[in-house]
Image 1 (tube, rainbow, N blue to C red):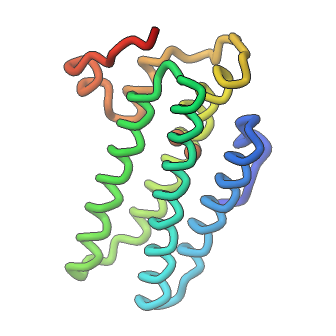
Image 2: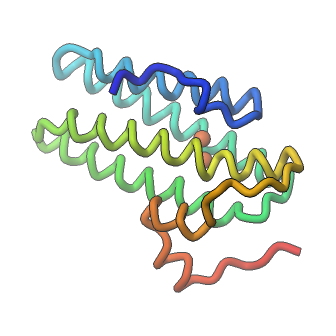
Length: 156
Ligand SMILES: [Fe+2]
Ligand SMILES: [Fe+2]
């Protein structure tokens, strides 16, 4: 995967689309990093940016009372957990950048074109069917069981 921006990644909220562009370019920077020092720096920079980006999305969702905010936050948390696991592996000397890049690329595409697009549609007031049920998103994000076992409060 080349980690270049494609039109299909646009979710229709300008600030978030710009953040996603940077998110993707930081993944690419990590891919192009040479040697452990550059790799570690690029990974740290990416993690810092991801945290910023998640806060940015969650603030926007909070402000607009997005109906699936708790589930969306859980998907972000689950992703950060996985990233932390990669980070610990790297700190212990495992060379897992290839696996990490695969995971980052796949997660970015899946999450931004599905769950992020879902919130953008609701925030933009578009009640169009996304072609996939929300349950499918949760299964893909690996959080289906947690959500089913911990019912999320319905927002009024
Ligand atoms: Fe996002
Ligand atoms: Fe998101």
